[in-house]
Image 1 (cartoon, protein in one colour):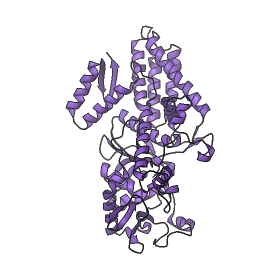
Image 2 (tube, helix red, strand yellow):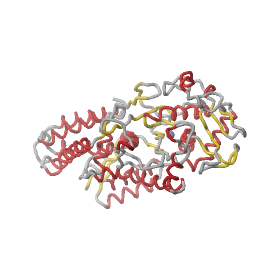
Image 3 (tube, rainbow, N blue to C red):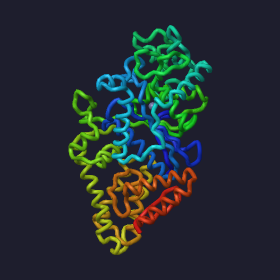
Image 4 (cartoon, rainbow, N blue to C red):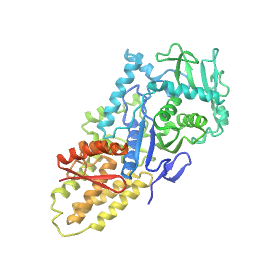
Length: 473
Ligand SMILES: [Zn+2]
């Protein structure tokens, strides 16, 4: 079976292809750092990590960019109103930069604790203002953007000039007009036009530009600009939560494609919301849980990772403390499989069960290849667990096959325990570093890492498809 993904843009599964052979340029919409990220946010970020891991298992070099929105994201994703970061800064009595930096560091630490591999870059929007202004200027020249306001200090994208506007979200411009609020800014040519650059002397973070002294970017132009600055005009994959489809991603497409006249992203992948206790999360409900809340309840990061990746990313998923208990038990079951494998004497038992392992291997790979069907892939692992625990597996060959599958499963999902064969964070990190060095043709570094691991008794084996297996000598 070949790798397929459900493309939100075409609303169907499509065989995965990339612009450049063997390379995936992937942009993940990252957090707006006005507060600590909660379990719901992490569902989308863990999906991005699992996707990246599987692409690497499949031999791709993944150039992953996950941005940090530190300005311009207004409350309720609206076109008008307060900047989320500014609101929090005033609340905490700090500067917006202090707020953004503090929550960025917490976010990156949480990602690491949850076993996410570091992205190639985590660009901050405030570091790419010039890139945004360059695109806005070019869109103006091409007639897609116009200035409004008494001094031409606000710049809008003219959606009537971009006929594909609405294709991703299924919104029709006529309906957007009919549904527009009556207090919509009259300075817009069209009620559905969206802001690229806004002026507000009271905004705490602001930059001088051709449009005046006190401007700041719209949220959407930030992602178009950061993606282009780090990955080029076109992406292979763009991800985000389902709430990003409209207006955020619709607007990104309009900006980027109007600029370059090329498709912005070949694949759009969107994660469904996480519900908590069967419903919405809300501050007033007291169920906006962070990683610290999870720890305070006695659960580790691995259990949270498992709880958030175990469902299919396009299906609803519910988070409860009872589910966390179940996930803890499920992981204990996988740990038991590994300990029976390593200490249960299976290797010296009579040859048995290679066909069972091969079936699990095929099921695991087919499931992951089929639009990252993690629940089905986990099903294959739990079936294999039964076979191992019931000692239907025996002999060196069968045990070795199980080890190889568990190594792949750990690389892909990051939830198996550290053992002789299946996973160890420090070793995985070194392998990742070596993979990056090789991709950059820095063979001296790649060689040095291999030698360091060998000195620690870790033997590497590069296999076709760009994978590296490892074991202790
Ligand atoms: Zn974005």
